[in-house]
Figure: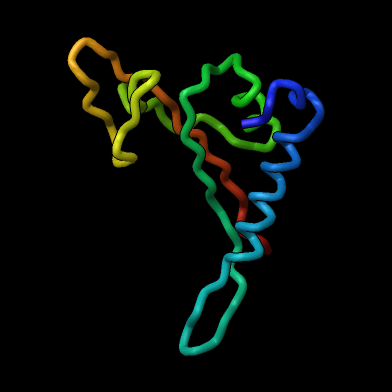
Length: 109
């Protein structure tokens, strides 16, 4: 997340580009003792933001597309989940829906 005072200045876009760049740099495959660079073809992002949010717009500008909806995936506001799939909210609290966005890249060549 970007502090409200810094929103709209390209900070989130710069962070996302850096994350994608670091993923590419770290993508190596070790085969028979050799190290070879491997192209990242798929990047997934899960978020609870609505389609009209600035976060979703940022992901779409960078090529991410909706893959699937995640019903009751996130814990109710003010609570935490175990980070392992759909949550079991406390009595009287509703879990929040999320979405999974995916960036697909074509293989080089």
